[in-house]
Length: 370
Image (cartoon, rainbow, N blue to C red):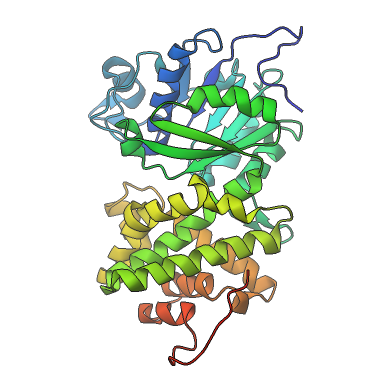
């Protein structure tokens, strides 16, 4: 296993942190980390390199604009970035000397980047995944993003997971929020904590990385359901019932498919707090409301509303549905199943409430069981 911060001679070294990803959330977290390394100069090297997929903005390279103006004018406009956060278009240059790699990219781009990163890995490197979402394999079932990183970089690498109730612009503004760091090796997590924890970004350690990661992926399905409620004009009472039942299925899913996942993890920032944010201010909620109100296709929503970024909840709902269908468990997860069918199989959105209260005759007594 990697031993973060310990060099080949066994001596303590200053860690070099790099950020892989520069979208809205990636830039916000890059800003936070770059500010933090300056506060902990005995632990970290000053420069934080951030991999930026090169784009042309008004006839100029995005990386040149970012390094000159210290602003990501496309994905996080209006926020001044620290001068020690350096935008780099060459992925090899970003990761070559890093002892901690922070992954903040859309999940669909991850696997194609891992061979390049692996070829330049430094000794004792660790990783932190801030990627939201789940993947699906016909043989393995649900595939965690952290496992994809381990598989692509080498099974010995220690991968922690950071998730929470975090809206990128609000984090960049310095508004108070919390996050959850799920870890396997506590000593590594305690070092990593210094890179993220601030008075306004409060990070809690939890020895349940799978639970933390599941929260980060599954919450977007609940966000879709909440947005469908908003699109239908339902009351806050109805929306609250949908959210509660969605959270119950999140917990149940973790217990059915992964051993050792703790229900208490779902009470951390990565769980109930992140679900609240997703269901009120999240991308999946917002896009699901538009989908129900207008009937606009998801591809057009992504193009016209999200600047080609993906609606996380749709892909996650599809992955989860495929697994439940394969295993004959659709009836055990009526909320997940209904959200998927509304989103991708033209089911009437008004049937959402039936998924959380299938026997709505006013007389049925149900005992809640996880």
